[in-house]
Length: 241
Image 1 (tube, rainbow, N blue to C red):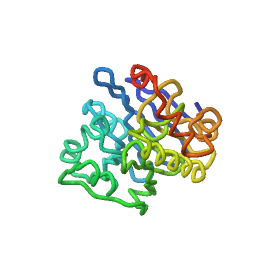
Image 2: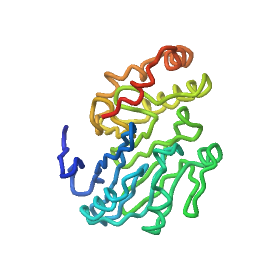
Image 3: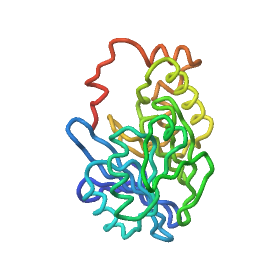
């Protein structure tokens, strides 16, 4: 992959230009679940944010130490347990905020002493501009985070597909969210999902658009009929790498 290096302990990061945010992948697992956690570091200030931390806290501590960065906040794409597992303990250790959309907080009941409810107003950590993009469908308040040319999608958009939808209304919302991303993103934007199936994180959106069929339905009704079709294999839904 362009500008991607392989590091020790199966951790990966990308070397952009000197001022671009640096993205580091931390692969974590528990039983059948395999998740991608991401540490995004501002090279100018060494301030960092963490996306959807779960399970293996030592791996996160190690990555922060290896990158010589300071954790300034935790970005949560949604409130499912495998995406919020370590948010509270890490916020306690590093005395930093946790960010989640107002809609997701209301729908899920997630709470934490350090929790900050956000809308789509961008903010900065160091020199990094963080832009939340509300993308409901997988859950009512799912958010993708755009940082530079990097989009962190949680369970909304995978390289090969999109997240599970709980019913027709959710599938219609997912269709609208994917269309929004299609119009919003630049071809060069890199996509970093919460799980990996076949293609590794960091795919260019132009490439994802070329092979992800969920981005090409003409209307929400045909999208929902396919997304909710019978006979989908639960095993394949958890066939992470």
